[in-house]
Amino acid sequence: MSENSGWAKPEDFLLVFRCTTQKYAENFLKKGEIKFGTPESWVNYAFEKGDGRGDKLEGTLATCDVFDIERLNELNQKYKKYPDLVRMPMENRVYLKKEEDMRLPCFCFYILKQGMFECPKEEGKHKLTTTVPASYFRDFVDNMEIQEIAKLSDEDKPAVVFIWDYKKFEQRIINALIAIGVKREEIIITRVSYFDFNKYGESGWWDFGQKPPIQLTIKHNRFEDQSEARIIINTDNERIKQILLKPIEIGSLEDIAQVSNTYLHEGVYVELEAYLKVLD
Image 1 (tube, one colour):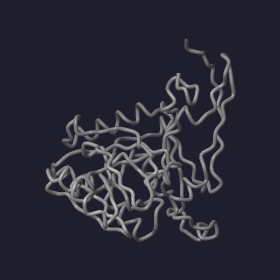
Image 2 (cartoon, one colour):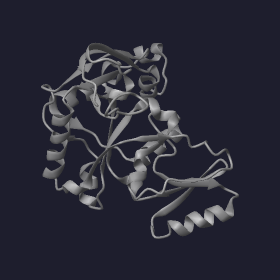
Image 3 (cartoon, rainbow, N blue to C red):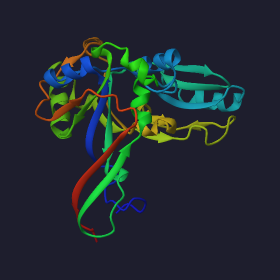
């Protein structure tokens, strides 16, 4: 069992969902319309609208203080094998990113993990509860007030798609991607990890040392409430990238999902019943 949570597999998840708009939710449910984004687009969105749906630090390999010349030279030397390495200055720091990886198609969704529930200490039937914080839903609408949301057209108002059979959902995405020419080994499906980028202070540095494109699965802990998993298409095939600039259809999801056309601005309370067995 995990020493921290009591669960044997606290990272296993029970439910998947995705915030979207009512228009997109309808197409998502009836056609299985999946829209891939790119880390580059999320960075641009953050500069335009602020952090939330967007994140200026997406795809960072390493960073240091702009005046830490010794460290910057060291990082440049380490990552010089990547001809597409870019150095993004922001405030008093420099962020190293791999330009081609910032353009890789990615699809993100929320995962409700076992570890989010308090683990009972005894075997048997139990009622388990947790909450999905309001910040997750508010980030998606750029923290608009309820009054502003009410003024939107129905198709532009927020909605949430809940998917209760993730395995079928994942396989349908994989099948659709392979059908357009994506190789199975190019499909990376993984959870996002969250870190305190400020842990070492304003003048500190960090280098996650990840093999690209796995740096795309690391985010600032400011986004931890988003409890994200990602599907990353690690391809250099420009034809595939162009296809994925537009939505693809994986088939109706009405058998494994449902839509809530509600702005859940106060968050969500989750309750379920489970029979638990203590592992030796």
